[in-house]
Image (cartoon, rainbow, N blue to C red):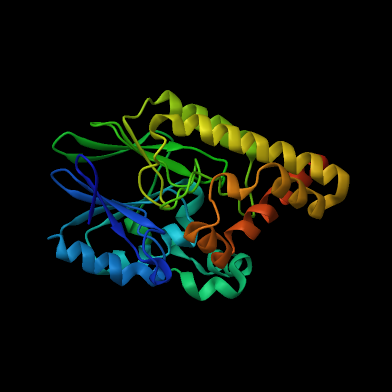
Length: 306
C-alpha cells in the first residue's frame, strides 16, 4: 500500500505485471471503500492487498467507480464476490453494464484488439448491489470521511471524479490525463466518445473544487499539484485544435498527423519507460483514433435523433 493522502492509500494493481501503471485507492473512515478496482486481471492482486491491509471479506463496504472502462472497472464483479457486503457506486450509464457486462466487454475488446487479454473481461455484479450515482452523489464512510462523486465527462460520457471532502483529496480518474512515473501529464483520449469541450469544462469544474491533493488513476499524485489543471486544460485544447484542423485537411490520417506534430508525446512523456508503456499498451494509437473520431463528429455531425 502506497500512502497517498490522509485516510487514503493506493494499491498498485500491477496491470500486465507492470508497476506504477494503474492504482486502486483505498479510503478508510469508520468503513472502508475502494475507488477503481482496476482490470479483471488485477482482481486477485487487489483482493490480496486488501486482505494484507486487514480488510477482510466482510469489511469492504463500498466500491466506487470513476467510469466503466475495463482498466478501471473490470475487477468489480470479482471483488464484489470476494467482498459480499460491498455496494458498487457508478454513473447511471454504467448500471446496466455492471449487471450484464457482455455488450461492454465485446465493445471494449474491439478497441483493445490484441491487448484485450491484458485487461480480461468483467464478471456480473448482482443488480441489487449496484447504486446509481447522480452528480453530487455522496458516500459517507463515517469518521468525517465522505466521498462526493462529480460528473466529469470528456474522457468518457459516463466519467465521474471523486472528492474526499474532509481533507480535499481529488481522485480524478482519467478526467485530467495520465501521469506515469518519471513522465509528465498527457491526456487520455480513447474511442469511442471523447469530447474535448466537455473535458475542458470538467477540468474547470474540478479546479473550482480547489482540492488540496490531486491524483490520477495512472498513477498517483501528479507532480504539478494544483497546477495540473492548467497543464491538462492546455493540452486538451491544443490536441483538440490540432485534431480538428488536421481532419479538415486530410481526414483521420490528417488529424493524427497534426496531433503528433503539434502536441508531441515527447514534450510530456519523454522517450523513457513511460513512453514505452504507452506504445506497448496501444494508448498512443487509441488517443489518435479517439481524437480523429471526435473531429469527424465536429465536421460531420450526426443527424439529431427523432
